Image 1 (cartoon, one colour):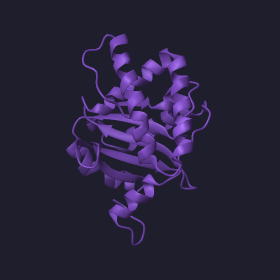
Image 2 (cartoon, rainbow, N blue to C red):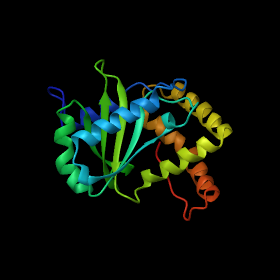
Image 3 (cartoon, rainbow, N blue to C red):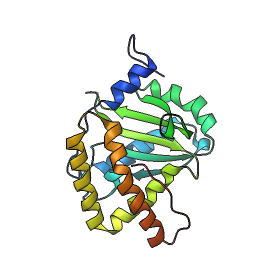
Length: 203
């Protein structure tokens, strides 16, 4: 993992979670940013390890206000192999890398998370690499439900703007306080789409 000079891992995590939370109007450029990054990842990473690449999170819902960061869900064959082979490739290109728990401080399953930034240091992409069945996969159900029900998407946008105003420099609190809304509507989404067992989500 690449750290700035004199920066410990603990300090790096603290720096990242303090970065400003900003909610912006929907940008029609976001799907293109996803497509370009998907092509880049498939070109530079071991293809035998990658099963599926999806655009998810709020930037994947047309018309939805969002943080201007494209969330990508990368379904992989073997996370331990990803952990060994992928960070050296992407860190060399300037990505931040974290082997992070799904929820809480030390709650498994762990997964590979990458932050891509533009030349100005602003986040442009979050890349979540998980195996099939990980809780993050429920984000695809939540995404599809928001696409289907614009009124729910608008309610979600209002909540996010409220939380961003309340926690502009605390990404952990911002994310934590969205959890109830996301879980509730993910359960509704699973029922609506005829899926089996409700589960949690991250967005």
